Length: 202
Image (spheres, rainbow, N blue to C red):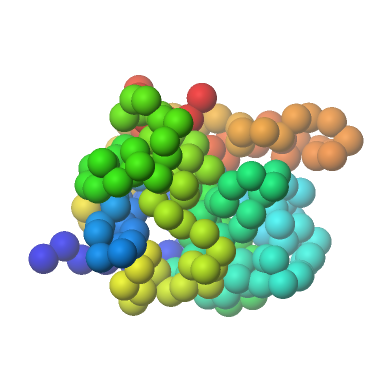
């Protein structure tokens, strides 16, 4: 029996690395929709100008990000799609890891029905909005405990973090170095992905 991934109490960079190679599972209408996590981004809380909790900002939208490690933070963005984050650290830390891409492994036919515009397998979950649509993840799952939820959880396929030689790093996507992100926050290498995997976002 595959165990659940529960190592989410550490800092977001450590958790981000550990998440690569694990399997995200969504059970929807009695069907398993799943994929291997191949791309993530770390958000470092109050100090991080790109984090929703920067400077201790708190609102009904981001309240789940202040839960203890192991909860889901799901938000709606750009008036178009949902994004799934794994909260990490301790309660009130306000840190999380954004799941950016999956390699689909189960329930693929249903994923194509959920994403009628996708034509190729690598188009299904190669982006944070794509994967939530493919797996039917929305705000109803905001705040669920990934350790014991039956609807959304992570299965541990690896007991050790993937070798650093297999992981590439880059700046996070969509942060342009202008007055919105003063300092070097737009350039920090806080995006981690499996080198050469075709399901990584572009």
